[in-house]
Length: 510
Image (cartoon, rainbow, N blue to C red; front, top):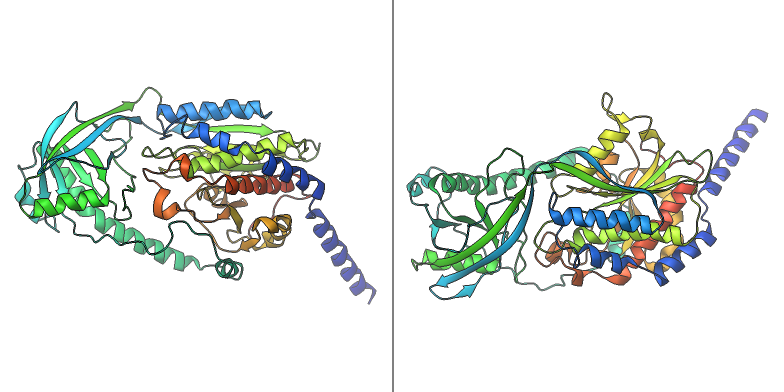
């Protein structure tokens, strides 16, 4: 009986200590809320990353300008060792310097059209005819061989534009958030099956396009037109393009058109009506510096025993070239920069060191974060955390647009549920309360999660993200919501501070 009582007493004491270690310092939270919600600078930061800077394509002058702005601003906020750190070789940079594309016959019509990245230009104004390729298999393509010289190639499509009967911007409903809370861990084989199915469909859809491009290059075509079926009402979704490998040749000019313009050209050409175009596109490749760079800065820890441990927060700084990368991901970068500004301006003293990272080349495959984790935190023999990696207390990421934070994805880390639930309690009035076991993918927290470090992405309302702004020509400052970004920066600052003063590092997945 005495032994049993001792075990029970020990368990109660351990539980009590653990609970106390996750209690929220409400005085600190009050300071964070006041600074974040009443004295915010998040929109100022976002303005300089977007309107004042322009696009931030990896390796472009725009990216380096934004990176240096961020580095200097973090120093101004009071962070230490603000720096640009090379993570390895990336490849050529690229910049769009001029773009004019219009239909001149059978009548004049300016086209909503954007050249894809890492593709060549026209070397001045050229007039060209459209050649419609109306085939569905590569064998039939042979009939077009030798006919593509000085033409603009158009693959026939007869897609139907789906009209919108719902809002482009939406917030999660209480029912949807409740389903997230009650979700069960998703089986790995279920995720893999979905992923394989998606990849197979994409490969099938692009195979004919790639074969046609190969023939167009050999024949000496001027350009190739593309269309993303997601785009409508003048919104152009633009990704992909040519190769950025240092020794690869300049690529055929590939131009993404708004769906309405693309389908107009298809119908005209299909009817046998000659379609003529004016094109004047100027692009520039940069190969003087092939390396990729992340922006890093720190708030040093103050506890003698814990200051060598690190809490990280991050977002990717790079964007595509079509808009100014406002929701993807100047929003996340501004939120993270604002979060560390809040902590410094509030006068709080984190016990652990806080390190902000603004990643590069996320859009090309999470290169910045993956290489940082590989270079600094990974034992490459075991693919588990090394000594430096074991000092990481946790990593927090924002990369889902301008929407406010509604909670956090546990990424399968059930042991963090009670911790995060308690940390969200002071923000229930700001509609952030959901903790879900679900995973979310496609962004930089995955680099940490893949080697077993606690890495998390916040749940955000999908404000126009997949319908309008994600990788499009209208991803601009005007589509940012100030109150949502203030809320997000405030919550991120609180999570980072709480992690920095917690008795133990955040639990890792077993």
